[in-house]
Image (cartoon, rainbow, N blue to C red):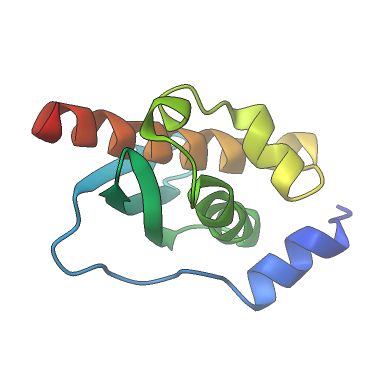
Length: 123
């Protein structure tokens, strides 16, 4: 398997990893086949995700995708996050091998779930 430099950098130096105290929203995504899990926390101001944190359990590509996804989500309107697609996450790590594309699915699902949680709680 060949991974991009971007993916390797996010895996070695994940951004925004960890818990968030009193988040405005929380969402999870999971791959039933391999058990990878991502949980995203959002802090929202004026309809935008101003702080994004994550926890993840899984393979290196899932950790990297979560890190890249957290950067991708930061500063974006919650409405945009409701429509985040796995392709957006995959592009953020400069691609994934076919056997690791589940990483982008897990992360996109978790970010969308967090955005949905925000809408349920605050709209």
